[in-house]
Image (tube, rainbow, N blue to C red; front, side):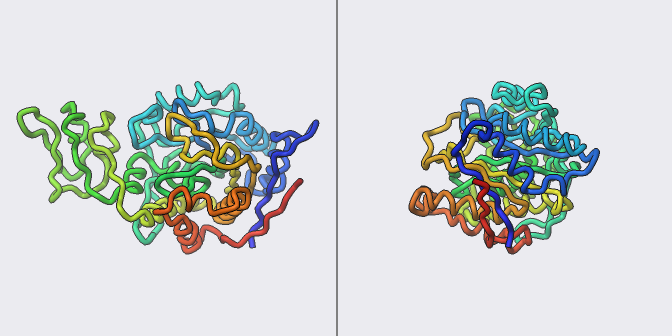
Length: 357
């Protein structure tokens, strides 16, 4: 049974939330997973432009300082988005992160976009999952020696809730990987958005795309298309958008398979921190943050990604007095995510919650 450590939001002089986070860092055993000169990826979500509920910079700074005290070399990271927004390429992503306070000066650690300039820098990792044999993990995270995952718990339209597993799986997939997780339908071209730039043609490995018609817009031959998602990744006009799959359990399982790929080789060198603060109904990928759906609860930490997710749900449901995420998203079977994570060997839903208050 895995331990999950918890601090609530009650504070007093000399023991505020940043100090409490320091206690969690010690209890979760960061000293056991960070070795001298390790390159340590601290995965967080910088927030879409307009979002205000992401984990604030002072918490990331505290974790980065702990890594440096242990002789590690931390960097704070996220990967690009599949949709066209303020974080779809590294230049815009870094500008958005800086506008939200995430800079080398404020963090005491470099900020690196893990999948490169246009989301094309990834490492293929074998996972042999139920849906995917190999996954495309953002290269900076794949090459890191250790991984610390800092997640803001929110609701989510695709998975009912988004936290550590989604932050690792969806968050560390390359843009092509994100397309794999979002869609198992071969993409269609939105002719109204297509500018005939031909980037999709250049990147299509199957030669399935050509410019057709009077307006010379991109067209996909589905008999030739292999569904790899490269065209979706490289279309920055949003003309070949990902299409959500109909079976949301499949999407959740694919995210778990990506999480397995991101954690592969780092099973004993990973730690997870979930922030149960400002729990909004939608994730930080939106350009706004709605009012919280439950009171602030605290911060939890564990070395077991499945246990920390189950503990997060339990704490939210206890505070709300009901299965909040099931109520918010009744068509999404959120336990499917945790059941499959157990099946993939990522951890156990059975846990002991240890309060430090």
